[in-house]
Length: 306
Image 1 (tube, rainbow, N blue to C red):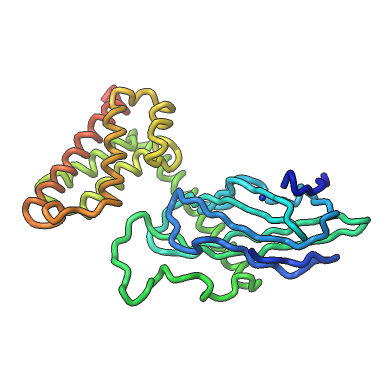
Image 2: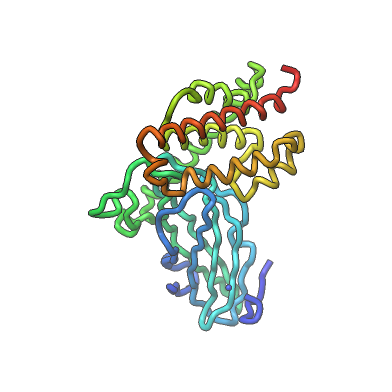
């Protein structure tokens, strides 16, 4: 299907379109590093082409899951003076245990002009994804592993790009296999996510603790919520979780409180009394004991016959 481009109907860096192909044009991503799970990534590039050219809309990238790390949420194309601008919006769908580099895929577009076929390409772009909660402070002398990506080798090199794609596919397949094996083992043993979470938290719910122990305990319950929902459940999705799983309605208020406390545990700076000393240790221990009792209540709902 061929679509006529119009400035009135179509969303900086340029690429000259030519018959038979052209070099890939750069794409702007701001910022280029420091993304976390759930963040949106907006990539903008512009292709210079005759305004009379017609875009083959079938060559536009398709919205949907790209791999285990990225999902394409939206694609916008707008006419610009002397060309078209392509704006893609991605979402990071997984959390890395340590900073790592991902690649936004390149785009190949085709146009028709007076019986000729013109082609244009936007380059593949690297971005950095960071952990949900950092376990080490960033050095004052620099960004460490979160340095800007333009210093890395050219991602358009055929060998590097091919290896990166193969590695991404292999990691995605391994993640899916592990999730399937874990789910099968849980069903085979008769266990359920919140039951397992309560068992893990029971060993931690004795005596004082520290802020990192609290964050680790929250991760245990977050994993249980994700397994029940079949996907990552963020604070903004707690009402959808309750709507999709009405059996937990009796604990609706506690679920809301859990996600509010989780955000404070990961993203708030603790006061001196909370962060250290006997008072801080007792406060952290009380938080873990609350999580353990909460997990027990959810486990009773999950397995009412036990």
